[in-house]
Length: 222
Ligand SMILES: Nc1nc2c(ncn2[C@@H]2O[C@H](COP(=O)(O)OP(=O)(O)OP(=O)(O)O)[C@@H](O)[C@H]2O)c(=O)[nH]1
Ligand SMILES: [Mg+2]
Image (tube, rainbow, N blue to C red; front, side, top):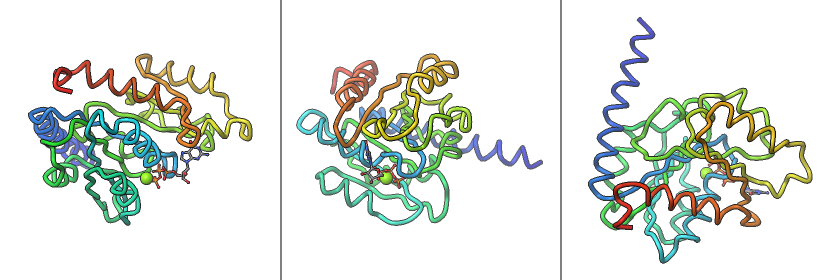
């Protein structure tokens, strides 16, 4: 019986996620679900991405956190529309939370919606939000064994960004083995080493993001 309940929840989530996707597409908005453990660099990446796309593509942001609006305040300073979702203890965003927030996002004015999920490598992988791409940020201080411990997240990601590579000289992290392990689980995944502090790799990330948007049916309108 318990298994059935879980399945019902995920089925209901999937239906709302599809509705979110249709709503986004009818407004020509491309959505990215950014996932990582706490502190891996989701907000830092959002801020870097906004800076690089300034004057090129209008961005909106949905910030998911258990509590506080600190990340949303940092994003708002960049002058982009941002909506905060507080899950009140929940360890992930779900499609219904995003549906509630989307109503406050000016979809007609933006082309790209960045959704910062709650910092957690487990539950966010289970819940489709209606996004077009899932991006996982895995950072050097977390260690290179994470694909073995949280396989679903690595298996589902369209891209894995290896963040904080400026710290490589100080920590034991084997980037090549890490990348090889991920490719073994998910052969189509794009892997980009980045640093939100030095800016290394951010250009490549933004190029990949734009290529994904341009590959979609809304491409010509971007
Ligand atoms: N050295 C280094 N520090 C970084 C880098 N990116 C982010 N940080 C730092 O890591 C800390 C956490 O970064 P955030 O961007 O807040 O991480 P987050 O994933 O949004 O964190 P939560 O929202 O709490 O889950 C901050 O102190 C950042 O300055 C990086 O590339 N290198
Ligand atoms: Mg954050």
